[in-house]
Length: 252
Image 1: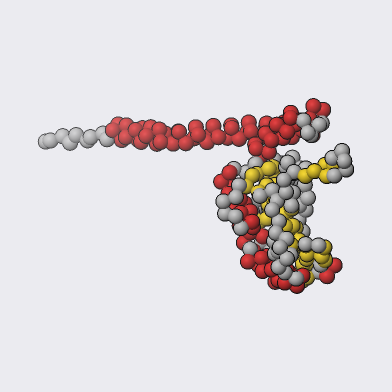
Image 2: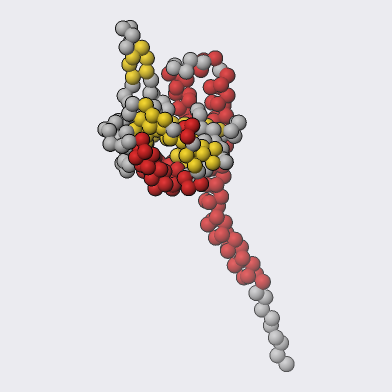
């Protein structure tokens, strides 16, 4: 009578499982360590942002906003609290499209926040071609354009009473359009650039109270139930001021 010998496979199976666990941990652990390191870096950055914001608002040494110490601290705050560069690329592209200059330098200036949550900017400020731009970071739409850069554009009065100005943007005042024609140019620009402005002009009506003119410039405004948009366009057909007030507050 032959005896049957039952082989026990539990031990090799256990070794196999342990091996698989080790291999899995070796594969996953660098990613977990990287995530932990990134979280620590993000926490440290956010803490520094909060400290800088508090110091800029309350520390007497930052009271003089023209001082170098204030400017450096604010620049540090703006850099740390900004969206990542790759998230701002669309805003930069939109500004270049507005200007019609695909290679122009676009400089991020700073962000403005709701309360003390410095992870979610409400609006962002940029400079390009000596113009100042305001962008909605949720959509990257341009919500304001002005003829002065947000930082560095200054003017003053000389001793003889004349005024001095920092370099100003190039503006085309070549007389090409009547007021009616300039309105058509402005409407076409807004319609053709809906992708960067986020405005549906078909849902708005011209506001007579926001239509005007002065030498070299025409003014137009359109309104609907949500608010208005306003444009200053030169007689050369260049939009030099733009303001979207459709439920937004864009002032600095």
